Amino acid sequence: MIQKAFIRNELRYRYPELKDSIRALMQPVGRPLLFEGTGKAYGARVIVCDSAELNLLSSAGQSESLFLCIGAPKPELLAQYDICVLPNSEQVGNILNFLQRLFDRLDDWTESLRQAAEAAEGVEELLSRASEILQNPVLLLDARGHIVAHSEQGEGAVGMEPFPLDEIIHTSGERVEKRGDPSTPEALCVQIQSGDARYTLLCTASERMLYASDEIVFESLAGFLRLMLSERKRNVDGRRKRRDNEGATSAFRSLLLQENEESATAQALSDIGWSETDAYAVVAIEPVDGDLRAAQVDFICDQLESALEGCCAFALPPVVVAIVRTDLLKGEALHATLRAISHANGLLMGVCEALAGYSYFPQRLVQAKRALDRAAEIGGVACYSDIIEDEMITCAQGAFPAALICMRPVLAMRLYDRAHDTNYLKTAEQYVENHFNAVKTARALFIHRSTLLYRLDRIKAQFGLDLDDQSLSLLHLALSIGIAKTL
Image: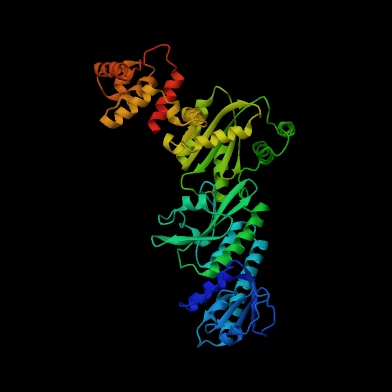
């Protein structure tokens, strides 16, 4: 069965001036038949006929059929049936042969993909087979835009400037879509869900333009890929050099995904030498270059486990996760080691600081991921404590608009600065960050101390904000400054 829209689009390549009256574009139809009489109900089939035959057709039971009519039928029939009008000069035999070859070719391609899916150990083998058919790169991206698998043709395809990858990843749906406009090369995309993980399957028109048949192939590929992902055939962990943490990986993954009772998981970890009384930091990791294929995941995990004592690292799409046994008061030493690993291997890391036991593991991972979102601007490794002020601002704004939370004097400073090109808000921010030390603040602002004191007096006189007032809420002040900077 092939959708009517696909057949129409294929015919348009052969007959650029093709006219049609198809209303049920997504209706699937079977292989073509010749016209067999005016009283027959044809059902969901492609029917090849001429205009004289179609003009005599009974209207009963023909809503599912697609008629390929040589010559134009009576105008009223175009309002009744799904019809493609072909040139008068065309021969019935040519149309039948064209359609039979079309159905045969798609059947062959689907069977080839099915065999590849059954035989392949990992999805990259299936993607490479699909790429041979599509004659274009095929890639699988996770929810954060990392490459988790690609065809042999896919090397270097992702990251190409013309393709709006971020938009495609966040807006693709569960049905195959063709994207592209005059300024952007065409691409096919579809979203694939596997458990809690979300992926985007992408075919970019890098080698040749995309045809209507490609959408059928791509849809078949997505179906086989969903099955392979559900069977965990991504080949992750297949080339690990260190194999001693397999039991711990399963247990920690269960904790993070809340698959089993915490007590049962704690006992399983205890049996292999991990203690519930120890403290554990949770780290979320991703590569700077976006390459998170199986071999790269294995390499990252091996690097972390080799460099960190008491570390269990594994893939938990869309990131790599490391559970590190550490001490509550040794955070800085851990962060220094992570920064060294980050810089040496081109990695970004977000860290949820250590906490004793196995409670709140899913929430710790959420904190690590949020820190990861800011890691690029904080030297490659960000701790959740580094972004806590921004998190507080986000939480505070959950129920009310930011302007209603911000201190009015701080809001007034922001508006005045924008109107008069002054920097009173920056002065207040530095004064708070330097713990109200005038000398340090003046140094940070590259101004004389007397200039700073003048500005503080102006802030007090003009905006009614005494930054040295002991009764001032420091939390509200810091929150207001953070909000004002975003307005």
